[in-house]
Amino acid sequence: MLKEKLKKYKIILASGSPRRQQFFKDLDLDFEIRLKDVEEIYPPELKAVEITDFLAQLKADALKNELKENEILVTSDTIVWHQNKALGKPKSAEDAFQMIKSMSGTTHEVITSVCFQTNTASTLLHDITKVTFKDLSDEAILYYIENYKPYDKAGAYGIQEWFGFMAVTKVEGSYTNVMGLPTAKVYEYLSTLV
Image 1 (cartoon, helix red, strand yellow):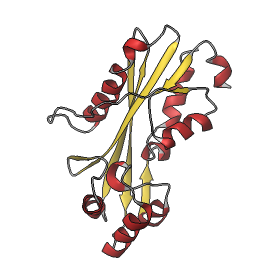
Image 2 (cartoon, one colour; image 1 turned 45 degrees about the vertical axis):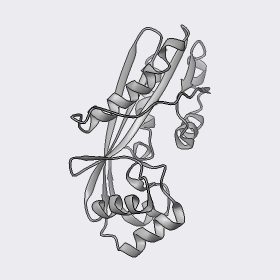
Image 3 (cartoon, rainbow, N blue to C red; image 1 turned 60 degrees about the vertical axis):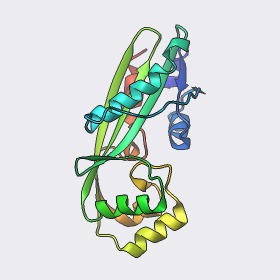
Image 4 (cartoon, rainbow, N blue to C red; image 1 turned 90 degrees about the horizontal axis):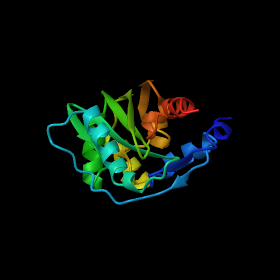
């Protein structure tokens, strides 16, 4: 449906994430993947959505000078925001354990920002989803880390895996946002371009 309407545009997804790539396929959109290494460092004073907005724009800035007139570059960034702190991807099993343990029995926010960049303009949107975990035993956390190795996931967990089925008691907002892309908002924005 939207694919037909967007024919005059070329959508470029600047993401190595298999989940984000699958979302674009599942949304029935034609797209090309274009990657550029970007050091994801943000000013320490930034908080919550300011961080993801900054990083999504940073990723877009790395490629914007290469864009042709009909190209729309899509970049995004996701963090888990918990206890006034950003939880990114864990660096080790210990790091993953500490992240998950800190969220046990509490509610945290998953924040994703998406940047739509053309050769002349940039639009940022974001989504925030609240996720509640039940109280988790150390044994369950260790089992998950050992068997699912969630080192490529913000907050050290994937809601679409065993952990999400076992640990998540409540989701307020977009489920796909927790997986790394607020698909309804992305689709809605692309619909406004035609």
